Image (cartoon, rainbow, N blue to C red; front, side, top):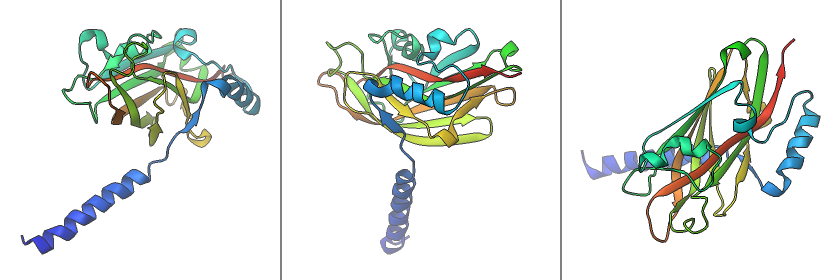
Length: 222
């Protein structure tokens, strides 16, 4: 095929890729300074329920939480390190480069006996990008941009997460109309995070994610 026939196809493909990427909505960022007041306000706005900022420690009695990843550097840097609430540990991808398109996935589900009586919803995702040890934070890669793919029942939503290069937890809100709800019909959700761009480390080319957590509300159906 001649170049003058191939070139328009290449341009069209590149344009379509850029257009698709630009149409992915970004999740709303909130700083740690105002997150507690925001959660309290949300509870007041949307009625009954218990607003919790740390699901994994408080709600684990009725939620199953598991993680998987596309790779990890070593066993001590596995995906489960992202939910152990120890910031000095982390999931570290295992590729030789910075790990673009490597992913970590969290699956959350209602335990059996709670599926019939309990409703849970959440829309706050909290992330600590990089290794949560100041000595090594800038020496390793930190995530700059992620794609977040949420599968809840028959629904699949995709978002951009733009992370600041800061040594702190960063909070992101899913739009209220797209909030994740766990109930008897949809008891499980999977949230996949794909690395799309990084802040480069000064010493190592390993990309780290120290913490993933979620916040929401729940109530028992009568």
